[in-house]
Length: 399
Image (cartoon, rainbow, N blue to C red; front, side, top):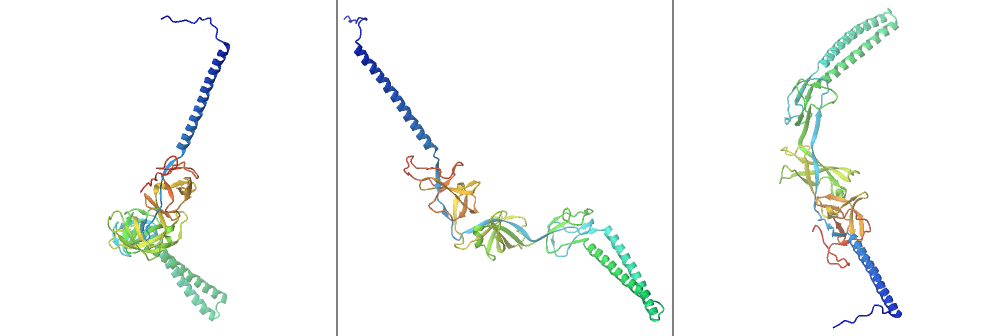
């Protein structure tokens, strides 16, 4: 079947052409409007997604109350009841030493002797000076006695007799001074014998035969003697517990080298003041040490049994703490899911957990592992909560 062809030279009516142009323009306008609306909608969605993504998601924990009447365990250092370092009081050379480290000594036991050749010569000279002064005093005494008798017979003037009496007084004073100087040197010579000042144990020895011993405490001590029959333990107690720590209360000491063994101790005294640097009270415990198990310089753990209701503290994971220029803080999530930063004070650091002064409510939501950028007033999303704000549940980290 033949197809009818329209002649190319047939003219399209002007009215129809007008409507075709208007239709094309309308289609183009619809395309443009649809594109603009689509782009605006996409930008709105991106903006909403970006804002939602900028809100950090956090998990929280609730503060836990510390057990009433719980024990308090704190680190401490051990020191001997008495400990002294013995230096040479006189210059010389070590003649010999007689006690080594670990030796048990009694008060007055000889530890070492020092040769003092210079001091010996000074003593010899002082003895000669005293003999010379004594001889001069004897001569002056005889002369004064004779002139006194001559004055009775009016054989000499009173002035001359008084001069002889004055010379005798001067010679007597010279004898006294010479004797005092000799006594001083002899007393100094006594320090050539290094003796134990009290019962104890020798904890160090630096004396060597022939070594030069300098007077005045310079250099190393010749010996160190410690009285370890009882041991002092020094412990720093946080301020929040200071009211519960009183002299006379009992404590237990534990040391890593004696697992499973405890050493009884009694609180002897406290400093009576809170240190501004550490915010702690220094206390002194005294423990018996008959078997010498406790050694000076050791680190120990002191455990106190606190009375019921002595303190009001709360426990938090250490991961909730924020360290900033304003001090130690925690971040709490408010009812409107906005952040509020609160300063706290640690009463006791137990490693994974810390005890703080009771300044929080058990229902407070404390952010666990807070981001570094978290600031006051920031909006957050609770982990497990729907994006539209519906609460699906809260994650309690660390429980």
